[in-house]
Image 1: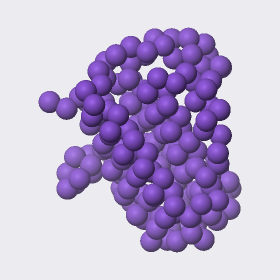
Image 2: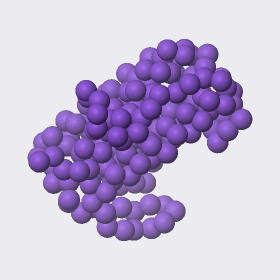
Image 3: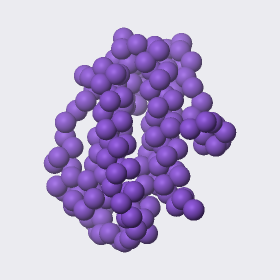
Length: 165
């Protein structure tokens, strides 16, 4: 049976694809439009999501957080939605390739954050964090779209359960 954390990561990928498809329909003007919100544009939120997904991939694959933070400083908010979709697809492929190589998802790693210190955590907990982080920011994007008069898409977990993913 597939590990619950992998199911949640698969949900994360599905939900991003659903939202990115909607953003593609709306176009790059909406994607880069300035908004009064938690982030100044949808592209800034998506850039943040991309950076964080890559940061956690580095950590899961054995790079310490301080080094991973240095690697992932490249902002991607100036890219088009098509370029971002390509980046997320590449990131997903990296994750799946790594995780499908018989990685023990319950393996304990030492997470050493510059702001909170050291703690033990498992790869599965990190995957859960990636998934919940995505949920939070997809919610930001939905609110930003609605604030500007556009509809979003449903990316609830139950929608994923009943989809043809």
